[in-house]
Each structure stands twice: as C-alpha cells, then as structure tokens.
Image (cartoon, rainbow, N blue to C red; front, side):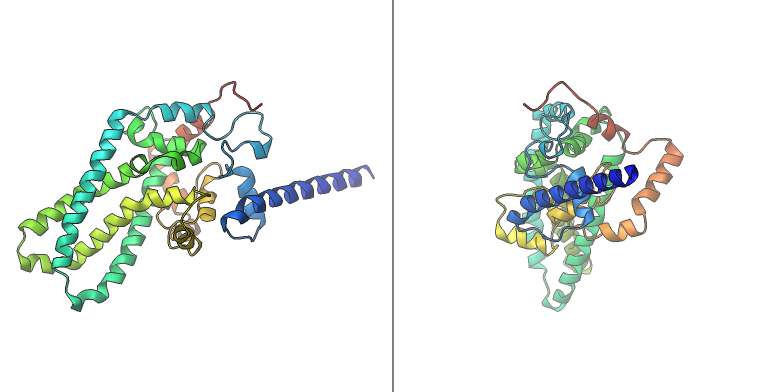
Length: 319
C-alpha cells in the first residue's frame, strides 16, 4: 500500500509538472505563431533551455541560482569584454564586404548569359547547403574547443559563443554590426579575390569560370547572413511577418528547431544558416565522431571551457 501510494503521488506530481510545463509552453509559443504540437521532446526542451520570452530565463524553473540570462555572472563578464577595437574591426569588415558585394554583383550582371540561367537555382541551393555546413563546422569548433583566454582568437572570436550559451537572448540585444561583423569578415578575402579576377582576367577566362563565381557569390551572401538568421531564431517578438513565414517553412533557421541546440550541453544541431543539415548530420553521428577523433589525438575535453563559464556564479538572486 505504501509503494502504491508513493506511486500515485509521483504520478500525480509528474502529471502535474508535465501539464504545467505544457501549459507554459503553449502560453509562450502560441502567441508567436509557432507550431502548437507539444510532444515530450517539446516539454523537455522547454524545461532544460532558456525560455526566449523570459528576460533572464530562470523564473519558470524556481532556480535557486541564476542559470541563464544577462544577470548570470559569466554572461556579465563576457559581455564586458566587447571592446572598441573589436567594434572597429566589425565596422570595417561590414563596409568592405558591402563594397565588394556591389562591385562583384556588377560584373555578375554584366557577364550574365540567359543560356546559363538554368544553373542559378542549383548554384543557390548548393550555396545554401555549403553555408549551412560551414556554419555548423565553425559553430561546433567554437562551441566545443578552445578557451576565451587564448591569445587574440579567444576574446575576439570565442567569447561571443560562450556568452551566447549562458545568455542566449543577448544576440537579440546586439545591433547589426555586433551581430554580423564576424560573418561579413569571413567573406571578404574571397570577395576581394573575385574582384581581382573580374578586373584583370580576360573576358574568355571570366566566362569560363562564371558559374563557379555565381556559386561563390551566393555562398558569400548566405555566409554573411547566417548570424542574422541566427538572431531571428532567438527573436520571439516583433519579427516581420515575412521572416516568420520563412522560419515556419524552414527556408531560414526556425525558432523551435534551433532551441534544440540550447539544451545543455549544447552538443547538437550546430548548423544555423537554414538548419537543413542538422537532422542528417545527427543521424550519422557526425559531430560526436569528430569529437572522439579530436579528443583521442589532442586529449582536449569537448566543451570544457563552455562548461566552466556556465558554472561562474555570484550572490545575485531574484527578489
């Protein structure tokens, strides 16, 4: 009888908690035009990741310590390390990228041949898939390895990844420059090389490599926009209807889809351009196999620095 009683109590408690979480999830998601099918996975994601509409992400969990959000000790320290020099680098990168995009687009239009127009859609799709894979590799590498204390690369490039895991909504408070500066910077070297080729190669050579340059140009666009898509996946209020439409039909990274990455320990769903490759890469255990190989030959522990920042605490609690 005692065991039976305990079982009933546990069952009721579990049922009550699940019901409460489901209700909370519905309250959070339905007003924002997100899917309304709530599976067990949805409830677990809601319980174990930061609610995007909760300013600090703790109040729905009765947390005794601040687990997520801008009041987390690690998040505050990481945010304070954004420097004027970093800001200048981002501004220059965006300016150079836009100028080179415009310059190269002029030549792409100039050398356009309607007889090759059927190749543009395949080039665009291949560009999207390449950008999605590249975003996953970079995201996985920056999330999983290295330290904020590393010279130059740590504070300038790994810091935002550490901050994002303990304060996911910080990206929604970043302006266009801080959000996109690094992604625009990645495209600048090849765009500069492309501009050189369009300027100095003969017409014959340009036409011979034209389709490849279209692919690379579209790839550069998708790479440069990746973190903007990422930002929108964390923006649950005030998005234009056309952005929500693109998210709902998985043309760009959906909000609900990306929340799977933000379940601790952040070891899945790394692709953030469209997220199209996340499921197939998980099916073949792509990331976990890579981690086994890296750990075997380097003895480095995956996400050790990420975990260390998440554990930083201070005596700050909610009233």
